[in-house]
Amino acid sequence: MADTRLCALADLPEGGVRVFEIAGLRLAAARSGDAVFVVEDRCSHDDGELGEGRLRGTEVECPRHGARFDMASGRATRMPAVAPIETFAARLDGDDVLVDLPQDLAP
Ligand code: FES
Image 1 (cartoon, rainbow, N blue to C red):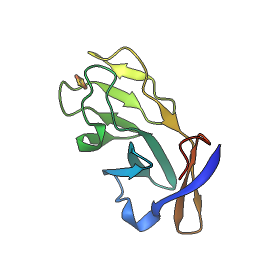
Image 2: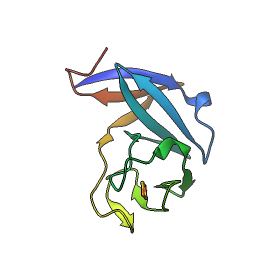
Image 3: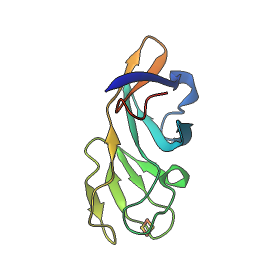
């Protein structure tokens, strides 16, 4: 695992979801207060783009059919999705958002 700078904290609007691409991997990132979350930008139901979805508390809602996922654990919390999504550990380092990517994906 390797910490990789994803963006500045100011690039993540409170309550919004943004998409980033690192090493060919599309990530959806969100912020809720001082907590930051990074997940794969792909719904486990039918590949909807979660980065186009809405943040509801610490859950992201898929824009296609309304499934929701806990962004910390990746657990599906609302149908029609049942399988979890992939999550990546994220943290703040000053004003930077760092994401912990598997070594083979880190740029
Ligand atoms: S593709 Fe996400 S809920 Fe269907």
